Image (cartoon, rainbow, N blue to C red; front, side, top):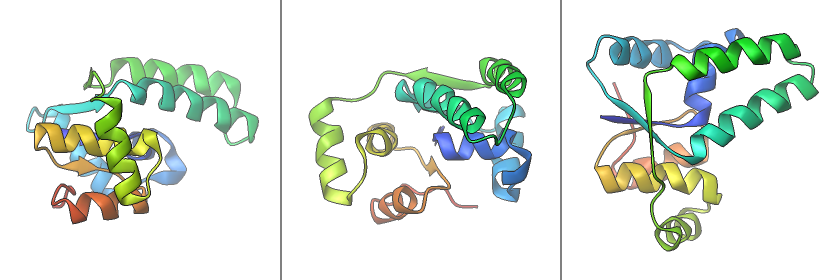
Length: 134
């Protein structure tokens, strides 16, 4: 099992963010070597990222629609977020947003590695011994 955050997923679909580690992980997920999970906030973060990308002229609105279809087919299981108190404690402890701490809380609760390209979140995962590594 592996926890996937928004930054990691987006690097899998935005061609200008191509990353060998991301490709390796998603290929392993497709082959059934990993079960990918994300907290329910993931759904909202992904869609907000599509909106932001359109507004910043990074992608066209039609591309956002195509990316939504890719997202809908992604082999990532969405699970409930942990308790707000636990998430907030992690956010304060590691200087994270509530959103980012949600991924760290899920990784901690499931004792699963966290795959992220966000530097601050990755550092927190390293400190907790939860960072995904090859």
